[in-house]
Structures are given as structure tokens and as C-alpha cells.
Image (tube, rainbow, N blue to C red):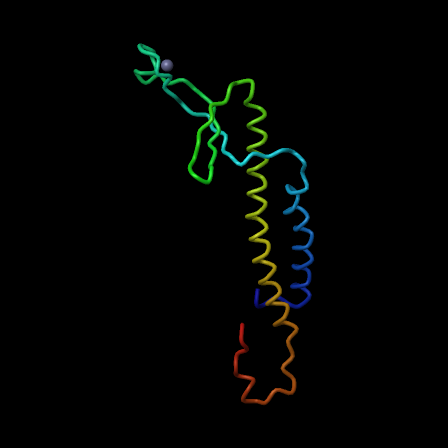
Length: 137
Ligand SMILES: [Zn+2]
């Protein structure tokens, strides 16, 4: 990044600005979200003599819910799968958008530094001070 011209850096910043619209996208959605994790899993039903006890497990769906005081598991009936799936998927998109925003922020901060350095003029500085790095560099 240090070899980029000021024009390159401004173009990169313009690109980040356009990218921000996409990064924030999921937060403009209106779909309901649920802060849990949808899972298809294999389970034992517990009925005596059922073949699941011999390892032929039953497929099941559940949502893992991370409550503040511990995780819970909620079994989901087939007719409710779609609703839970879409709410937990929409939640996942929000979490992903948060992570992308943090990366975006870090990349933009790097660009800020590079742009500031590229525009920096040390004209008029004493020769001995030209060798001194600035605070924050
Ligand atoms: Zn069983």
C-alpha cells in the first residue's frame, strides 16, 4: 500500500465507500431474526426397543439458543422448520455484516493513514527533524 499514488489511494477510498452500502445491506432488511442456530442432527428417541438404541438414529431438527445463563436446545417440528430456518439465517446475515463492517473499518483506517502520509508535506522542517518519526507513524 506504501507504493500507491495519492490518486490510487483516493480511488481505493471511493471503492470502500461504495462497498459500505453492500456491507450495511443486511441491516436494512426487515425480515425477523432470531439469535440462535438451526441444526439438523441425529437423535435417540428413548423408546425402549427402538432401533435408534442400536445406532440407527432419527434425524431431527433443533435450534440451539445461547441464553446468557447457558445454551438451550429447542426441538423443531417439521411444520415449523421454515420459520425457524429463515429467522436464524437472517440473524446469521446480521452477524456476518457486523464482521464485514469491522474489516471494512480497519481497511478504511489503513487508507486514512496512507492518504495522510501521501499528502504530508514536511516543507520548512529543520533538517535534523526530518529523520524523526511522528507520533502514530
Ligand atoms: Zn428411536
